[in-house]
Length: 367
Image: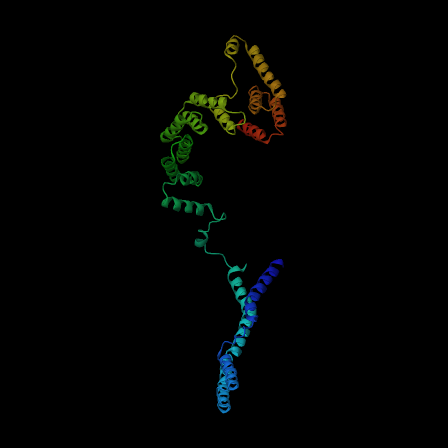
């Protein structure tokens, strides 16, 4: 209702703007015309008669002639278009009062009606809004890059999108263009290697491995490159090398690194353990122990870990080690108890709780 009131108010304002000039009458003409001249001549004749410059008979004849001319001039001075101007103003007023609203309504129903059909898809694909499909936006970016092939930022933006769409060959070329025009970096090399791996169905090819090694040469701590080099070692049958790479990553990583569960699961897959091993002295002493003493030593280590976690429950990796240790020892009840305590300890920290659940999934438990 308010919207229609505003429309009506705007229409009234537009009509008023048209009618206002029409309502103003024309200004009367000034006396600098023929009639003023003839009036001056009559006054001049009276002055000449008074001065005795002309005879009365001649003065009368002159007055008659000037009077005739004065009447003719007065008739000619009347505006013959006054009547027609009034008619024109009336017509303009009617058009303003009736025509403007009709024209406005016609435009609205033609262009602004809610019943108006959709634009053709070909036209909508060029509309720069956020509702168009991903394919249309990618097509626009590709057209831009065809016209501006040295736009490194454009290549860097579109490359991961192409990879997500499964267009791996185009994504690989986009990453190469990003490196060519934007400069070399460990991140770009690692992304290129990841895309080559995805294009090969998850196999780290020699070409992909070369990209990961190049990334490591630029940044020895690049996480993505390190992980895939470990995966390459695993696929080559070098499980020990893969375990070494992944264990080194975990040793350097912060406790809240989001990729820790992934690397921990990979380490378990190749037979490694994210649990730090005992000291050399403890290993040497364990060799001389019988089975009972060895189990006692292991349980002592696990108990100390459990005690530490009860005092400081923020260690996500520690809880995962404890749960896994109980599972290896075959003590399912303690494993479930440790799992419950771990979740209670992380209840107020959503990020750590998420990491804990991811790690439990990798251990085969319900995260």
